[in-house]
Length: 338
Image (tube, rainbow, N blue to C red; front, top):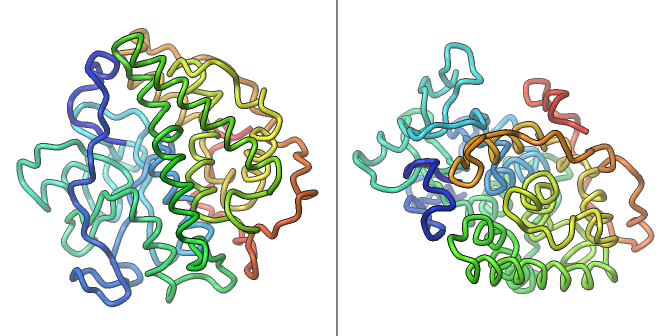
């Protein structure tokens, strides 16, 4: 999720998601000059952002907390970029910067694009390494294996990658990005086409998940992570704020049960901050919510109710195990939890 062209522009200019500009990869062999190394990099995220939340979930499932530190930005950013105002004195304690933009500027001065999360920053130099949200989590799953915890799941199993890639591409086009195309549409036809595509894809996914517990295979994969981060935001923000209101998530029996199943799986719901999510969307997107009023609803307690998905079988972590407790410094505040 990027910042850089002014928050009031949302909903007033045609929406087009920017491609990641910085695409260096951190790999086991260091072929881009960026080798996997414990403690060298810092992951900058916003708990409000679905793209960043993919990385938060992956990092936790894989047990990379000690190897890859994490900075959480304030969900209310200004036109300069994501801010570290949640930290003492408004500075990230590791990078020593007030704005994520400073890491972008250290990499490339006068960079014309937006400042987006997730962002991987090289700690020694303070330079941005990558903001490639599509590639980052795949690399965490496949290139960082030497630093994975014992019992870490295989989130991108080689034998299923073609199917995972296909499912993820469909989910991205119609759901992950589709809700934004609907929400930021500047014309009726543009909105209706995007909204219709969102629900066509959700119906297809609901049918698929009525027969199997997870999207691909018998275990949680990267595909599930990418769908979850949109589903968990659907009723709190996309249904009303983005006008994707043909149905609520809670009105689709299968998808609602699937989303609760994942939410109650360690590594998913314990990373979600509904307070950050709601305040970011309703207070930052002033182009479509000029009053910046944040709604009180919806009731979040349903996320903790039984889902019954275990009847479909499946093994959430495959041959691995669930991650341990959330590190104390990363526990979501009570106001952000159901």
